[in-house]
Length: 163
Image 1 (cartoon, rainbow, N blue to C red):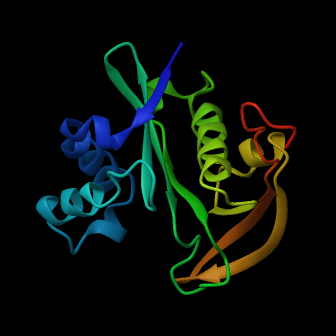
Image 2 (image 1 turned 180 degrees about the vertical axis):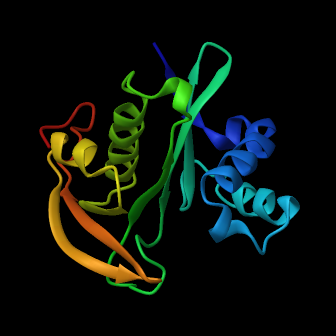
């Protein structure tokens, strides 16, 4: 089983996140120092304003991450907010951590009063589709073919209300 929480509550994990992302996407992070990567993660350490990064833990061990940010694609301001930066290390894959992080990101977006959320992916389309996301379009971004997904969120019922 795993627990999902905010990066804001666990800033000590930032060096690990930086190392994970540099190893997973070496070309993307090639021109950044580890300190610059870690500074970028620190900017995701919020709870109620974007960007908000979530973490998954199995026991005390960091098991994955995802971020809800202003845009799904930096060059497309019309596609917002965006759920992305999903990463689960190989030893934690196949256990529902990625799905749990996406669900938590959807809940977070809904709690922040968004009624739609977008995501781009090359490989996580199966998770999104199982959770009811719809393929909106294929996008060529930075010479990479991405699938853009859209999810209409069901507003959470507020305690003590009929809405």
